[in-house]
Length: 309
Image 1 (cartoon, rainbow, N blue to C red):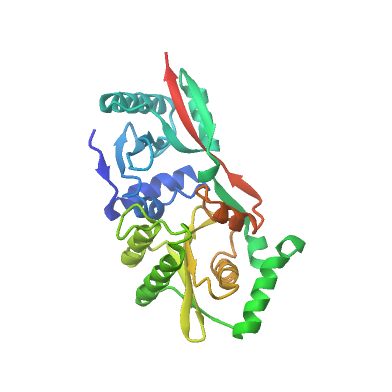
Image 2: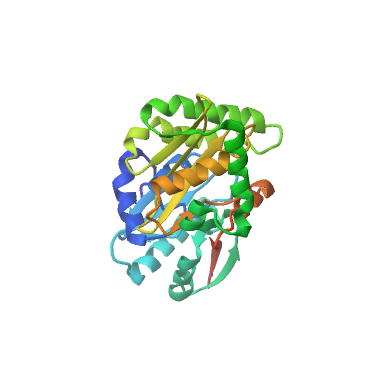
């Protein structure tokens, strides 16, 4: 098999597979796999009409993503590619582990593999799923604090300008991200190490630098008192769900995140039912922020380790 790094030119095959899977998981978007390809050191190949992806990063033990059908799912293809992956991992001296497996795909391993399975839920990489209507209206007592943040923002700044992200705004987005990193390095919220491809800033820059080549991506900026102070990027995952990949703003401006969150969802994804705001990576502050928007559920992900007889 020829394993290769993900490139822009691979978008068509990934889009076909992800559309076929019809998942709500944040990984099931080509932009996500592309922007994080160096962090996860991702490689992929096609075998028996299935897309196989592996990760061999510095941060995590090697693992395979769940094999995904290019067309119609066939159990014999799934079984055969798991065996192919087992042989490949054995040759590398690695233990075969399937990582970031969403709950709906765990059943494939249970149903078709003649192997004992070690299955473990990983909370830190599970996605937060919200009602679009809830994020748009912020109605109800539980979200009153978000309405209060926006009201305070409006009192202090008198309003804002909402601008759709275009190519000419790329520099402003990078400036906002750079300033966010400078403010958050001391607290540990920013994990950037220069130009390391393992950090979020590098991943975001990959999207920004290739903006014209990702037609599915949508973005917006918020301008306050004549200066851009926040930006966000997202896209549709399937017919009823959108995902937010990036959201960064000036934390000195009270309520800026509540404003851009509400405005982007209401103006760009109002036709959806659900919004995926991705994982919390096990960071307590990020977990608290995501829980504060009252998710309706989490899309749980697992590691699956088959133990063959």
